[in-house]
Image (tube, rainbow, N blue to C red):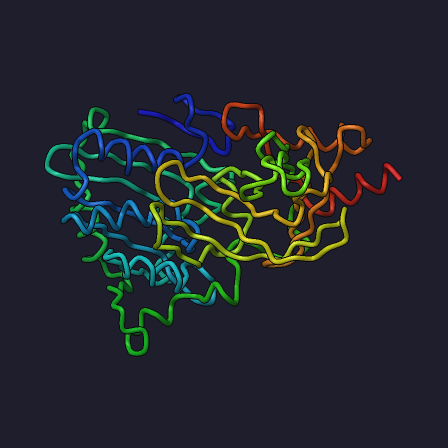
Length: 361
C-alpha cells in the first residue's frame, strides 16, 4: 500500500512522484512481475480524459490486447464541459479497448485505475483524471493498493457491471462516429485544449541544461562533437505542457509520439518549427528538438532555458546564463528532478515571470 501526493510533494515510496509513476507500477511492473502480459484486463474510470493522458500507455495496452488481454474503460462525457475528447476515445478504440461513457448529468467523478486477472489485482484510487495534467502536474492524491492490501471483497468486473446497470445515461462507444450518439458527447481537442483556461494562465517551463543539452550548441561546425541530433531533454511528466502528441512513428525499434511547435528563439532572433517527441517504449525519453541552436554558442552547461508557452502550439525560448541577475531568482522554480544528474525543471506563470523581469530592469 502506498500513498502519493503529487507532484513530488509526498510519497511513501521512493521514486514515485506522480500518478503516472503509479500507473507504470500498476500496468507495467506488476503485470511483468506476474507474467500477465496478454492475460487479464486493464481498467480505467475517469471523469475527464485527453489524448496526452494516454500517450505513455497506449503501446503497453495495445501489446497486452494483441496478446489476448483486455482493456475496459468508462469515462465522463459532455462536449459542452469538455470532459473527454474524441481523440483519446478514437485512439483507445483503435488499439482495441472497450470504452463506455457516462453523460455528465450523472456527475461521473470517479478516478480509479488498475489491473486484474485470475491470480492478482491492483487498484489505484485517485483524485487525478486520465489527462496529461491529472497524471503529472495537478496537485492530486492517490492511494495504490496491491493484492496483499485488498482484504475486502473487491472485483473490477463487478464494479463495471454495477455502473452499467444503474439508471445512468450510459453509452458503449462504437467506431461509427457518424451514427453513434456517444460521439456527440466528446469534445474536439483540435479546437479546445482541456483544463487550460485562458492565455493569462499560460506558463513558462524553467529548465536547467546539462552536458547533453548543450554539447552540440558549443561545438564548432563539422566537428565530431557537432554530430547527432540536438535536443533539450525533458521530464516525461511535462507532457501536459505541449499540444497533443498526435504524430505516430511506427517505424524503427521504438514507437514514438510527437508534435510540432513554433519556437521564437529570442537570443538569436529566429522563429522555427521544432518537434517534441516522447518515446513510448522502454524509458519514455521526452525531448524538445532545438537544432536551431546548434553551433551558436548560445547556451552553456548549467544555464537555464525559459520555454514560454504563448499559445496552443507557439512558444518563446530564452537562455538565462549563470551570470544573469535573473538566474538566481528563477532557478528557485526548477524544483523537480530529471534523472539523477542534477538536471531540474519547474514552472512559473507567465504573468509572474514578467513581473520579475521588469523588477530587474
